[in-house]
Image (cartoon, rainbow, N blue to C red; front, side, top):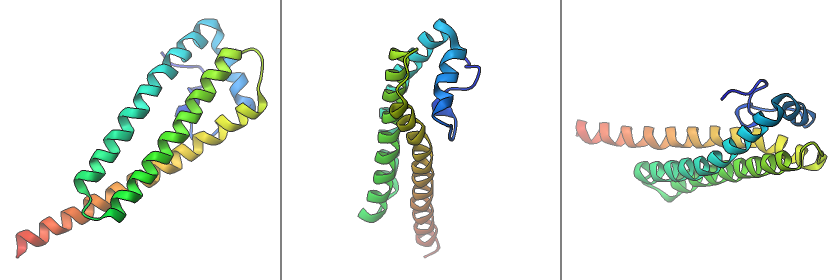
Length: 140
């Protein structure tokens, strides 16, 4: 179920004008499949948000680490939600264009990936601190 230019949310960034170019290249059946993919993406957003928060709760021993990870996970989910709902809207009004929405969607995508980097780094930090505590407890 690949897309000729790649799905928008799988790219790190793209120009707003690339949204219309992708939709034109997909054709009618490709745009219908892309709408289905965006429905599945809405479910995935909830799944990964709760997974990251649960993992942070498991590893965190302080409110600071937990709060930081949850804030990054919430930012990531909100950006992904904006990107997905914006893409759905643009697909539904296609071939009409909505330049402000294309700009919004194209800015949500890199923000989502930056927030994912924050989640990954904060989870790594939580895991590292837990590992260090476990190692210290075993040595003593």
